[in-house]
Image (tube, rainbow, N blue to C red; front, side, top):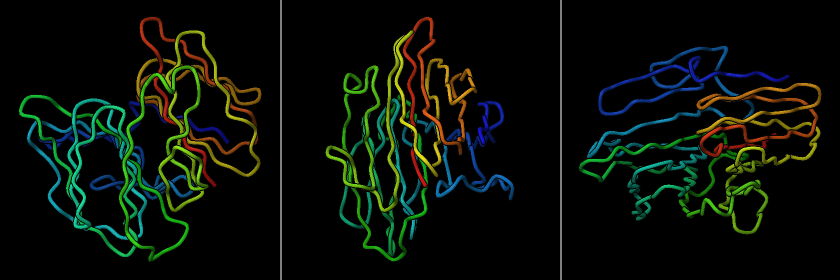
Length: 239
């Protein structure tokens, strides 16, 4: 099974202080047929206005991944963490038995664009935790860079789920491949640029904001096809 959700098919939520594109049921968007893909419950692309943010609120039994594309996002939580995420930074918050947090845009004049994904953990009632890392664009140029892993891959952020998240920046004509994996799902989101995706005998052309849900045993190949800038990909390998 391969399903493409184009950028235009996402649900748009515009509250003035924040503009969001929801790929799954979330907040004011309710669609029982589009509630999750495997353990992935939410995938939101957000643009937060200057000096705006989410007030402190609770979560439990969720793995929340946040990736900053541009601008600055400030995180605070009741575990004592305070951090400003810059472009290329990723954080994982394991809500576990319960955590309260807030995110805001500290800039007075610049919007922040960030992607947030929610995953079900592999076990409930874990101890809450928060971690963040910065990744250089050069380290993912024309390669698949693992940034989050549930199996302890060196140099990645841990997550309480059998998930690996990759980033890739593909120049025009360059290719990378995700090896054949039996009984696995793959979720692909094109942040910017253009790319062709091949899986078995199927070929897809993706545009910015498009996502692909793949449940098929095949090697997946990505090729950068942008004419003026690299393609920026976020790829999730999961059960």
